[in-house]
Image (cartoon, rainbow, N blue to C red; front, side, top):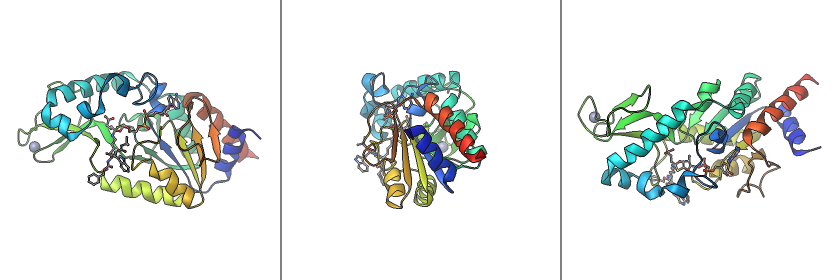
Length: 247
Ligand code: BJW
Ligand code: ZN
């Protein structure tokens, strides 16, 4: 049995499967990843753009980068990987998608239970009074100002050195702890604490499926390593799951 067939069987026989996704799931939508060839951290330094210190020092610089990313994401559409994950949820197989992505593409593809560990690029938050506002497109004014107190608004995402939103982290831990299958897609599994979730699932006996064209630290722990692009592998996997469910 090849890895896709084995993984499909595990998913079809599971009673509580959850997915953990990273930037690789959106790569084929044209949203750049952070690490690896062509990744954002080849061109930009994370400490200049994705830390609270960077924002305090130069909010305009940080906002220019986020506005550019908002423009890229606005022009992007969900790809076959996002759509296959939404289909697996519709089939009743997948109970939730835990994502490190801030692009909202899982929701646009139709996934309903999405836990966002690192926030969402389509929200802003006031650094002075905490007001949170949803955006309907890239910010027009840089830096945006709070309509309640005039304070600086920041992207409502999680930067290095910041804690994850408590509710999202608790939900993610509960999903990982209850999972009998965890499908990990398109993450380098280097950023903590998100990278702990597959370990949590595995330590409770879950079957780990890892989809990635490159090696990751999860490979040695995974039951199935499927080397390939998410947009090619996941539709095949979802189809194979449907076939198993019919048998
Ligand atoms: C494909 C593909 C295709 C390509 N198909 N696949 C040890 C323990 C705990 C913490 C730390 C630790 N050591 C250091 C830390 C701190 C730090 C950390 O983890 N650093 C590591 C880098 C070493 N973590 C933090 O600071 C976190 N906070 C924290 O720990 O708080 C503690 C605290 C508690 C109480 C009070 C105060 C503090 C926060 C981390 C926040 C990460 N933020 C970012 C930016 C988000 C906003 C934004 O988007 O701008 O999140 S950084 C960036 O990395 C982004 C991502 O979500 C995250 C993960 O990246 P991801 O998704 O894995 O993408 P890539 O690019 O790394 O990988 C892409 C993969 O796709 C590759 O494997 C490719 O091969 C693959 N791929 N094409 C499938 N077609
Ligand atoms: Zn405010």
